[in-house]
Image (cartoon, rainbow, N blue to C red; front, side):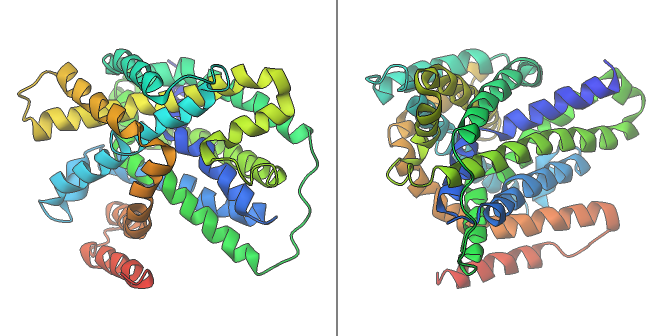
Length: 384
């Protein structure tokens, strides 16, 4: 495979692994709450929802995809407890279950009376079938699911933006800072920095398996960086359009639950065409992320908790059983669990990521103290 094809397919895979259920919801929320300051609010979510996660991917590349080496610098217990907490939040106790609730909201546009528990049960079975063949994950994401996802989203965005005028310029300058902070916080909710610590393993392994990288390992970094530009560029573009849409249709979304916002906009602009297009876009976005999350948590559960005493398919079944149960809490219930945790922890994780890159590239020494200080400052600011 030629280098440009590797860059493009890997970039698409990175985009699809980061772009999941929350990424379709939170940018719309940012736009809807921006009070006309959609550009500065969009900058906030790009900072924590795109730039920071891709910094995390770079940090993991510099650590050769070895998450244990990355976390061990915080102390030996961190190599178990941090992945357990992070993968639990991203997996069956958080994002993985959230993927199903968001996909269910879109599926109801086609079959309105479908109960959540039935949809969740079928979704878990589908995820099981796709995840069990994890060696094909990057190829599946980059070559098949992501192009379909991008086409579906493009159709929604084009019709939505063409169907109404741009929102009026904001007059209240003071609310611009509030919009920026809202963008920052909603970027936390995507949990993509946490995802970067673990998703990157798939991408790094994918690159290393190519003959050209095996012949010249030094090519991995520039190829990875170029792939990141492809993935981050696509993610940024879609985020900005979704933020804009949220601002344009803010009045129509005032009473709409977050997980149903995209469907509400599509129905207003596409009419009868909305149901199948939104259904395809949302389910593909959720599915591409769910496959990776299920695989990551199941692997950790089998190796670190079950000590490899159970086969992979049993670990995956346990993962999806928990996911099924948590998904019945619905989107709002899951958000109430993970939102406060992310707000407390994210700043210190950003510090850890940046200093880890400094350590590998320029020999930075201090790591634990700045990370702890960042956590303490955030706790104090919240009055905890």
